[in-house]
Amino acid sequence: MQEPHTATEPPRLPPQFVQRYSASRLVMGSNAIASLRSELAEAGILRPMVLAGARTRRSDMYARVEQSLEGVAWVDTRPVPAHSNVELVEDLTRQALEAGVDGFVAVGGGSAADTAKAIAIVMAEGGPLARHAVRFTPPSTLVAPALRKPKLPIVSIPGTASGAEVTASLGVRDASGAKLLFSDPAVAARVVLLDPSANLCVPAALMCSTGMNALAHCIEGLYSRERVPLAETYALEALARLAYAVPAVRQRPDDEQARGQLLYAAHLAGLVLVYARTCVHHALCHVIGSVTGAPHGEANAVMLPHCVAFNAAAAAGPLARAAAALGLEDGPQSLVDALCALQVSAGVPMRLRDIGVAEHDLDRIAAKGMGERGLYYNPRQVAGADELRGILEAAY
Image (cartoon, rainbow, N blue to C red; front, side, top):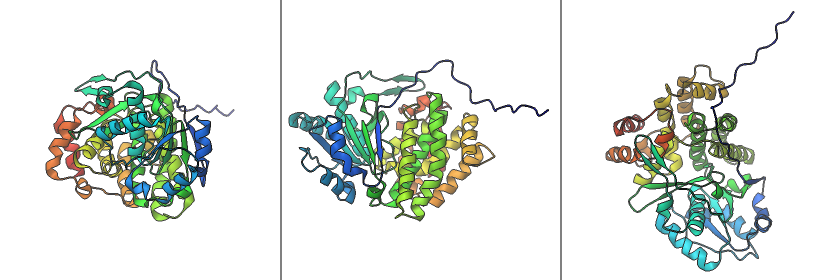
């Protein structure tokens, strides 16, 4: 008689956990932006504030947004800079209150999405913005203010693979150059429009570098100290899709199908962060951006293999499952090697020196990194700034 098949035991469940669900509605398809006006009406938004960066405002994507907003009493703003900033958020909050804004449209990259989220927080919870930031004190103290008031709805039209449209977290740079981080499930976009045809105007290099950020969402979500089992389901699916889509966009930048695959994979990777938290990788990338102004996607592209290597021993099980999802057999080291190979096939930067980070910046980045909340969730406790300096040196 044939022996019955014995299934492999899945990863152990934690003793207890709380699982959140996103309230987002996703509309995906060629020319999805044309539905913007009807989606605003469905969401009850009559006077939206529209936010975008300078590059996005000059693009075909933004022209499509303007066309779809014909007949809507929308509020224009000045361009959102990379990493945004507290002064801009507070200025735009005053503008939104004076104009009677009742919702937001965020177009383009993560900075526009995060700015919309930050304005929504200040409008609901009051200012100044900084008092709502999450605070981490090494080695293990985390204080996250409770943000309980209802927030105005956000409609997001992503122009990169950041996944910021669906996450409950955001980051905004303060006057000192530090990146303040916030968390509030109520600021995840109410409606997300993924439009592969409009994305064709976005440089392939930008999509590939931000695609590496999406990969980092997946990997950190697999081994974050705060995660629920559903995070792994999204992470493994998104990993496999990203491994195909990132190099495909580089090789075929005018292929709408490849753009769609990358946008959707990045959206799934963003959902990972609904059920998990980011770790040392994002901690360092946040500081690299705030200290040097380097684009977040490029910082992610450079740092990912080095941060995975740092956590390899402490997160061997999750990383082995990530490797298996990519068809690799040798666990964490094969994953590190595959990420390095992906850097090459995606044509993304591979060294910090290539994205404008100077060697004299490394000490400052390491010191500031010790105050980042990502260290709290990291599977390997960071003993001091010298360990962060070691990761940065390896990437330099």
